[in-house]
Image (spheres, rainbow over the protein chains, first blue to last red):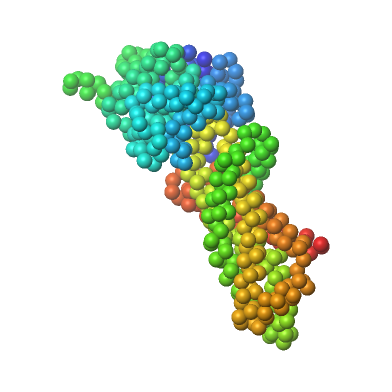
Length: 247
Length: 245
């Protein structure tokens, strides 16, 4: 469904993605792990046309999109949802307006239907009665959940998460991981999750890739990764495995 | 520098083309007009008042010094106010108040990924953010320039009555010898032109804002400095053109 072929992205002299090759299957949950600054978020932004690659190709459902204009990207972005690293909520709009913003843009739903969709999306991220609040009146964790609600309210076919659970409490983190799993299994949503959370990746991912300095250094199912001999993968795994051993 | 010029031209061209595409953002445009015109009114009236008083006092002082006669001061000052002072002082005040605000707001939206979020929701950021501000600054600039001109002339008239010995009737009579309706039109054209500069330059620096407080601060400073320079250059060009009419 999604394919990266020899993707290269540079910022000045610094090469962030070094000829990356990757395929993502429909309905798959793919976790991308790696230390900070290895190009994980850049990969997602290239996929959505928010950044342009310096070389290589990006294929989405049989179309090569890397040279697409903003106009050409519109239908692709309609099918995809990106949950940003930061909440990225519009400060001047209430929670309701933030979530309804995209629904109004893409559908001809009545106000009653929009109200239902907003309430449902907020319910999925365990939030209620905050529709009339402004983002500045919410905690960081709540803002992140509203951001997730805004994305899933549009029922995208592909969900991209850029560190969705960073800064959240363990209960909400678990709920969001469960939500990713449910969306993928029930609605056949394809999910790409950029994360540092190896525990979560082992629990819900179909495949995990580990990136280092702009390249993929390991790829496989959670079981395959547990047997990996790559030192960075071992480092990521050690904390989780030690915790399991203690329990 | 060249890179800035290219990206500014791209954004401006995009803004012009997207002005003719739906949706027309009427609500946002009037919200911005309220911010630009209504909320800037007091500060502009206050500042241009003093600028006009200084202008007429200095004109009188120098005319007395050089030609030993200040009878032409009302007409000279009124023309200077209409052709220059009202529009330029208003624009520079708008740059520091509105331009800085736009650059900081758009810059913060850029650094907190709100601009990317707009794109992901299928909204054109230039159409959503630049066009309402452009509309507001053009019309706000025109309205505020007219108000500033009137306030300037009124305050100059008060000062000339109190300190220079010209009654209001003498002031108006002197003013009518020099000033014509076209001078007010020139002033409004300047106000509209400066109104184009402020949001375009401010949004340009906002869109290119680097992350962090320093990045937002730099974008704001650059936008105010660049807008001010461009306004002064455009003022020269327009003043030169208007001397032919």
